[in-house]
Length: 385
Image 1 (spheres, one colour):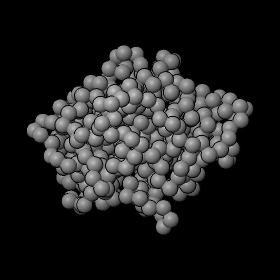
Image 2 (cartoon, rainbow, N blue to C red):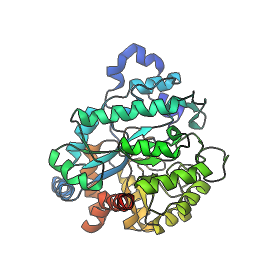
Image 3 (cartoon, rainbow, N blue to C red):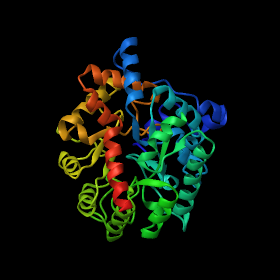
Image 4 (cartoon, one colour):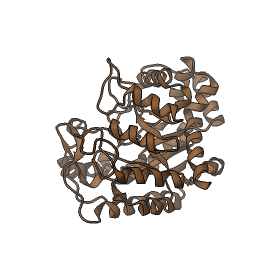
């Protein structure tokens, strides 16, 4: 779930009063799309669709339709409006089909109930009630699995399920959780999540928890805790992919040290002298993840870019910095901050521009899905051993 600010939520007139005045239907209306910043010919788009039909495209971090908000309780008023805007999974899944996206990681949000908006954006503003984090997870994972039970998507529990998902005609859905709060430091909970079909966990979101510090908060643990070490090792044993997005640098370096398997930063970018943001990671950390076989998800947040053309440039920046074999797509769809890629129907346009800018077919296949499948397969194979 990407950075949200008070301005982002209310700047477009999305107030609590709007919910009462216009109702949920109006709040769920599709917003104006982000700008492309370039033109695509019919021939370029057709060629891009042919490539997407040839090579699987997998979004490593997404919240299609904001399923995580269904049944959420204890929310701050403005987040209750955000909840009212949610529940449009059918629309986003339809967009996946039209954009020729093969699969996506559908992410629950572990700390959503306790988040609130301050001047710096989202952060945990109250503690969890006893059992609240686990109860919220149970609601969210059940709602996600209903998407497959109702034949909207095809559940993918392993990389080799990809072919079946493609044959089904329904987008593949890989269950993930953003934030390890629901684990409450319990190794046994990791096993329960695995049995639920969860195949990746982002250890920290906006709330510093008992595993590690969130990168947007003042450090408390100065790295991964002993419980965090144990959770990383438990995930390795099961073959569950570790996502280090949102984690403090000290914690992420420790997780890389503890993990015996490649990890992901599913939605971020690399800080530089000319491009800094608290949600970006250092080049040193990105290279360390790449050297361990991991991947960095290109994140289309509207931070210093304003259109899809800017996102294409950002993808090439990542490729230049860590190598094509370590870059993937992490859109944060439907929960991103000022997204410049906000509609899966635009995926062929993005592919067309990447090709125009010189990305080879081999490199495109790696970026779209090959790199993620390699990392997932490495984790899953180790879990089987």
